[in-house]
Image (tube, rainbow, N blue to C red):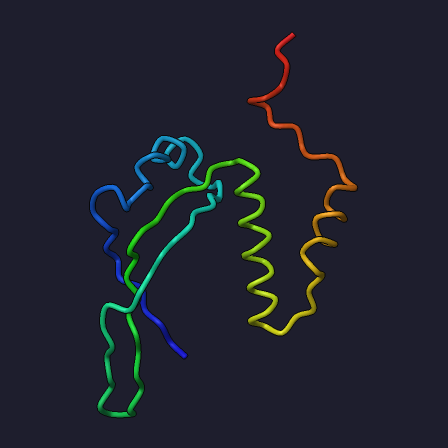
Length: 114
């Protein structure tokens, strides 16, 4: 099924993208994690073939940053994708345990300068 996305972003405090505008400009190829709330702003019916296409509207968007929360959100996104596409997924607790077997990558910003 086709779904369109409105190009408009929410106005005011529900649009948190401004908080990462510098990061977006400094590193435009980097992927950022955000939580998005959306709804359907309109439904279009093609009278030629009967296709019904909803258009989603972003009601709120909030960047998560590079915290532990961002990693958890990536994990949840991956699991939702796996559920939707029918791929096998590990239980969340087991997935966390497997990830903890490997050391976390060192962030240059957190490195000791001495």
